[in-house]
Length: 325
Image (tube, rainbow, N blue to C red; front, side, top):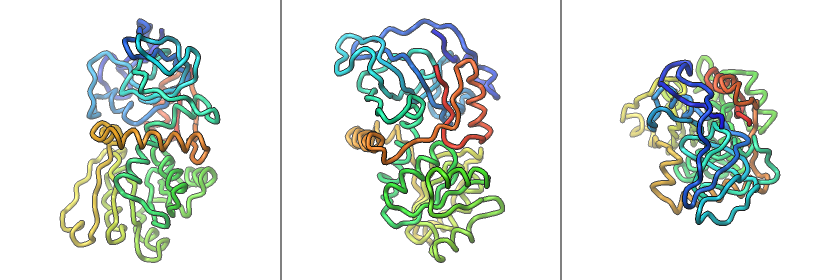
């Protein structure tokens, strides 16, 4: 089968190439899935450089989220039929024509979602769910400021928060992206963060500030976000796409009565398996119902994987870039 293989850790994806590799055989309790689509997530980019907390042994195939069809069942794998359309997640391996995963890692693909949409759903919406529900306890009517609102995890947060009844401020450094976010998900307000955003957020919220900030950007955005939080606000640390990991002086949380909360959705589920299962069930139930829906910016074939990766790396994507097979 063909797969994208990381053969060495290097910038600009120089250590990656499409190779012919053996098709995996499903082991006991595993399912072999013929992959139809796999979405690109920021951790995938970091792994190609060895900059993510998970550092697989070389060579490896990256890829977290995928959708496809059941191709073979390992011994003891139950509840699925050959040819069934499924969605799943793995820590690596999705950018390949086939992937073998535990049966428990798979769910039926919602009929209303295409393979590309289904592959775009898992990590982004699970991150949003753990952040907004488990960590921040976001309430209807509260103001949520979402940075990187045009990205995969940011757009998922906008979508989910609107469904939860929160008032959403979508933030980006691009007016064009904000127009598209508004068209797709109708946030209550938008803010271009170029040149600062604190005063604009305060004006939108009647001087109070945001109750919750969802920050996958870090750097200067994190610094200013601390200063536009309402009293008892919560700042959710999702990631550092800006490249700078910020620090916080303890006097700011003390004076403003705010909390800084880290979000690792996958690890949260591993630490609290019962809650993790509940979160998975909740987001997929909303997908089945059509309450929330991911946006696919572009679909490209495996041979053009670099285009999909660079859409994300260069922040030219609104929603998700997807590799299709």
